[in-house]
Length: 233
Image (cartoon, rainbow, N blue to C red):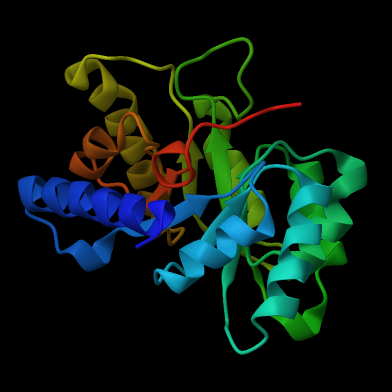
């Protein structure tokens, strides 16, 4: 068994334990393998171990990797999620190459994604990113702006608003980890009460996935626990 396959097994066990603790079916949490900075070969190893959904943070790296993996495994239908910051001049390759985008924080970006999404690909699944911890250095819409943004995004023709995403300030204490996830869940409930359907909470990474699952995460974004430590140039 490869290291990546063994790591996926370990992550799976952690998710299962978290689901058991939360009294949730395992099927309610999707594992998104975050493959940024790792080559297509690492993704192919994860595919061999059964993984089918992958997250990328950098546009050109992601687009190139999607093409390389598709060439190697044209027989497979994979799900690619864009989970990095979005610049206005990079929306077209995101709209044409990915199935999900987790990091929409401004209406302008959503409008560009909608305009540039090829109709034949079907709607692009969208999460709104929320700056849930109020950090000056973090991306994301302010909680008080969220409902108006959701109302505008849900009107765009080639997008499908699915839910909310957040990257809280790191905390070691599980109780402190859970608090921002609970706030994100409450924000989603407020939007649902306003008549907008949401079914996704993208929250939880390698260090806090158990806390996220306990608070209702439906997608957990796991990178280093699967692929190992990242090496940035």
